[in-house]
Image (cartoon, rainbow, N blue to C red):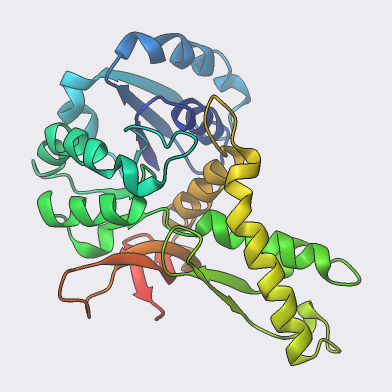
Length: 281
């Protein structure tokens, strides 16, 4: 897979280093408004390619050369934009980020980009909707990171409360809806949650876990930004599903065709080589 990153805030560099070590990225391309910011990091990654399983090249592009970078990318991950500062909500940065995207990303993608776009810039639901409507991309090729991180946190929280404790990967639960504290937890009872867990006990556990997820973002925030690791791993999960056509069920933010305003929100989706193969909602 040829993967591209646009942006170099907190997430861009962490994602670049991580993608270079995966088993499915063959070439990595990276651009940023301030090109000088990413040059030393690109050199650093290149010097470690002897340890990379499959990545054999890392390319850097000044933002004015973005169309050259987009020519043969399979997936483009968008991390650029203003970050959410303490005391702000994701919605507070939409106007600024929409202006940035309309001035740079939308014109570049509208020029005939054929790959898949994954937006992790805030607020992801609205940014994904903007890209779909204004860059004129096919609906199955526009994804927002959605509630992937909330789903991971929900599973981790539930697993920690079960006795005996369950690994998060074995807990069948999804955070559905909006990328904020108003998401809806969907939990599937079964052996992973314990055969003796009653309906009322499960409801209490889910309520407790949802509260923890809602507080999680604030708990990990620092003056330099917010959560990085689960976001990066969430991106890896999506790209891996695309690269290997895994048809994995992931809670990405996608278009709801039933809404007259063409809204995007998170639902369990089958993700494969073509992007969204099926939306389960």
